[in-house]
Image (cartoon, rainbow, N blue to C red; front, side):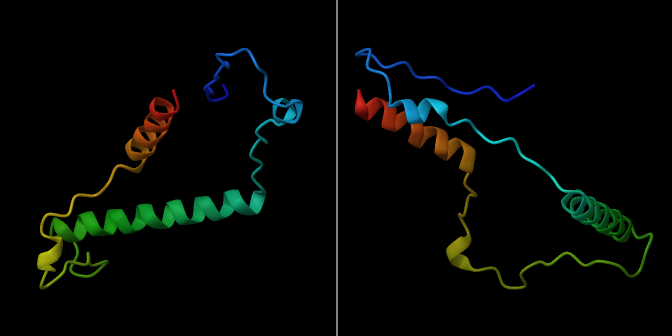
Length: 100
């Protein structure tokens, strides 16, 4: 099923220009090469994760090594990654509140 879209009706009853109504989101088309590339990267990453898990549990002496800073940057001590989707939602709602 297609993703739900937000629909905003104008308060004053004015309609947007006809051109904007005719534009629809194009459906995503994936080529066979694209799907093959995605499958390759996914399978390769799954192998890396399996090897990393087995090296952590001591099953394997060699394999991928997870990078860890030897001397962490003190300026990043309180770093908290941003939730980009949440940030965009907040920006969107702030614009709506400021325009009304």
